[in-house]
Amino acid sequence: MSASDTLKLEKGARAWLITTGFQPTHEPLWVEALTHGSTGEDRDYQRLEFLGDRVLGLTIADWLFGELTGAEGALAQRLNALVSKRTCASVARSIGIAKHVRLGKQARDDGAANSDNVLGDVMESLLGAAFLDSGFTATQSLIRTLWAGEHGGGAGKSKHPKSALQEWAAGNQRRPPRYELVDRSGPDHAATFTVRVTVNNVGSAQATASSKQEAETAAAENFMETFG
Image (tube, rainbow, N blue to C red; front, side, top):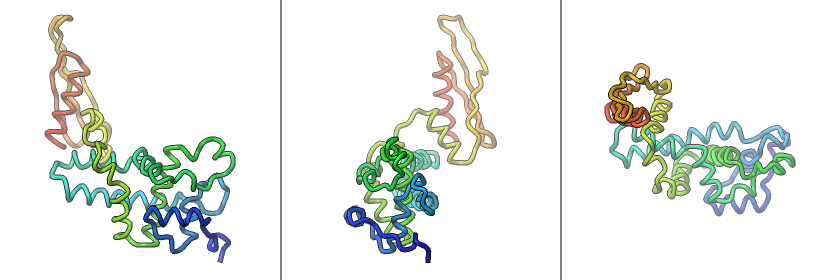
């Protein structure tokens, strides 16, 4: 048995986890989930973060699928917003993770405890630990509780059409959308622009407007209505 297998949570960290809704039974697992690589210890949260990210993604996807009747594009847009690093960091802040993250002195002095990347990563690592220690059903229930505010809010509901298309393409393992000006007509004071947007191996859509930017936006919106 290695030294890391006998690690114990600090009393305050254990009480905080229980109050938050976690059920820390195998304590070394939770110590690992709270440990940043800057400590130089044998184990840090990266592997648990990898696992927690997948548990979170499946939980949110199942949640959205059961509640929304929109097309795949709308579901993907909401999913991407709710599992984003920013949202994970927001949830982490709401439950006070920052004071319990185990950091090396330099990382703490540099403000890592308040970094979106660190907080989001630790949030996911705790979900990974919860999955291993308590199982999927308990973790799924906890995620629904912790994410209730984000789910009920505006995350991913209203997004600029070009941003929504960009996320849709990424979520479906496609190359980024390609915008092409296919026509410009009329005098300078009353010009019209026609833009085509294409996603490789999916299709294309186009729109005409009084500026190139507006045409790109309308084309992205037309694409999502057709293919999303």
